[in-house]
Length: 231
Figure 1: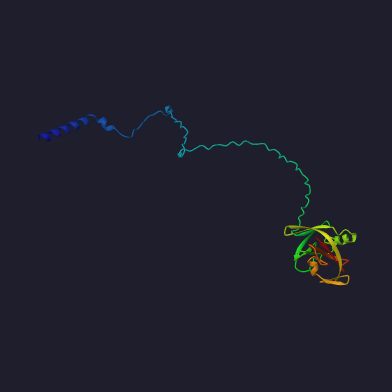
Figure 2: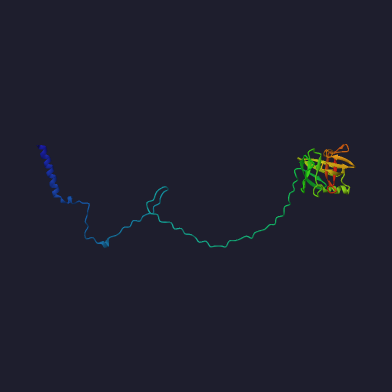
């Protein structure tokens, strides 16, 4: 019973203290302010420093736009250079020798292989190299073998040198003698009443003597054949 009395006494003493100090109950989060003079109110402005962002940091504050000042550049007329014309010297064409050819009496005549004595090159600058390797023939056109007829008539055919190039191999010859045959047909020639086939001519044989090369062309129009024998 004694403890309960003590507790009751403590509670009563606390209640008496509260009643004797009523201001302690006046505490509040709301305060009413009356009769203030607004003319003496001073506004406080806080100056805000510009926010500088570090690399990789986002800025929540608005950033003033940067104004770019463009400097006007005065327009100038373009300068045009006068073109310089240099007259180039004309280039002379480079002459290339045929793969196979004969050079005789100042002319170079292309050669082609054949296995017959009846080839006709027409108007082409071309002569034929017979398969025996000892006989060449062609027309008596000015740009083929026509100059050989003139050399015969002029008396300077014998002793004339010439060169034959076949497959890159050059062979050098000199006319030793010559003969004019009558043409009897495409494969038969006549001389002093005797007839001859083309066999001795394509093998460079004359009166039992072998030569290294023969050249044949037309003579007296096409009625005869001029044959050169060369070593």
